[in-house]
Image 1 (cartoon, helix red, strand yellow):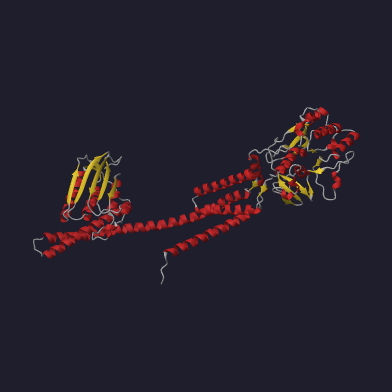
Image 2: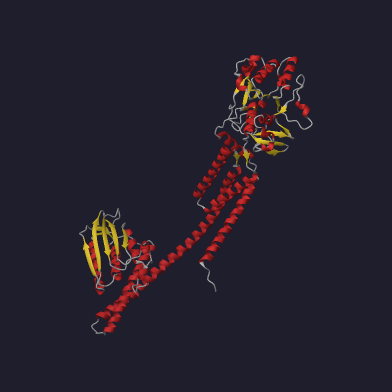
Length: 625
């Protein structure tokens, strides 16, 4: 037959822990799968907007200028600037060396005669770097719809639409994306950006591009509102602007009249419908493409990995740690994850999903907390039942010990009495008989001491020990104890040396303290070798009476000093000796001393004797005899 080794137990325990962890991981993955089915586009976009809004300032490419037709312009020109004024302003921008001029408003609404409009039309059509943007994106085969109506019928508009999350994604009407192409047709913003960064003409080179239905899109790297320099139209028309600033710039001309909501967008910075103009949105798109800085959204598998990890962590924390500690660790972990997600966006433009992982941490924690409470309540009930049973058993044991001890005292008293009668009888007995009777008497005395210790232990366990305080001189109690043990000391030729300072009487239970001191003196005699000394001293120190009993015995090993006052504990140095003991003496001594609000402790070195010190307070703090 083989005996299982410690390593087998460890292996079994490890295997059990692995099974528990695997089961928890399975639950976590199920939770992760269920949470992943929840549409959190709105929440995820809110976290995205928060990262955009808190992103540190970054400079734009400084290649774009905005020109606004504002209410002041309308007031000056008695309406929208007419075709002749528009053509003159366009010519000024071209003469200033503008790289491209883009009209991003309904130019057909500008007043003027047909001849004036035809002249303006010619200026637009014959200059390849003048564009008219349209919000529409016609289907293939409908390209004719891109041309304006007569008298501007030769002007071909170029799609430069805005996108907003109305039907898809966050459904909050916020513009976060830019459309790069539709059904293979490239949008105007791409061509404009290619004037400074030709690589973006190949949409595969655009950072963060993704396909959505029949479009190629990317996210806009927004700047804060009013980041791009702007000029009012009438300032240019009236020769009040420094035209040199338009040299080699893309000039976007649009309206800021607060009339039509279509001329504005909602941004990650603000959900107000007029938080940013269309041409400022176009500037952000073009600038993103020039710098090729579009944010990159992490692929879906990253969300799955994060979701699974957070779920496993949350469930492991809930089922393995104390609630307060576990909650702190989980909150700290999720906070750290959030900081990392924000840092990746700010530093590298990488959009790490946050909504599902954070929700997983919250749901897994609060979903499994009730389960843990049910388990812990069940365990508490089981512990309560076991504790109740153990208390009953302990009570029965204590009662049994007390009853048996009381019943044993009567026959022991008879044995002691009959021994005394035999020893005091005038009838002579042989030395062998006298030695046998002495042995019987000493054994009865030892047994009576043991029974008394058991009775005291029973009283302690049943909390039946009460102090009966009387004011007495502790030196008198010490001298009585010394006289009682003088014969035992003489048998081993041990000298008891006492140095007792004069002391004031103190309140104490003399019987209990006599047991404490008798135990210390008797132990010193029993465990000291022959022809040695025992020193007993008393003195007043601060507000305490200090009694010390010092012997020259075998001492107590350092690793046992903390256990010496435990019940039923016996030092390994004396277990192998012929000296018998119950292991209750020092336990009772400590209990009785602390009952007096004092303390008892030992100082010892293995092989060099021991010193037991008892400190009793001069006053008992309200306890009365």
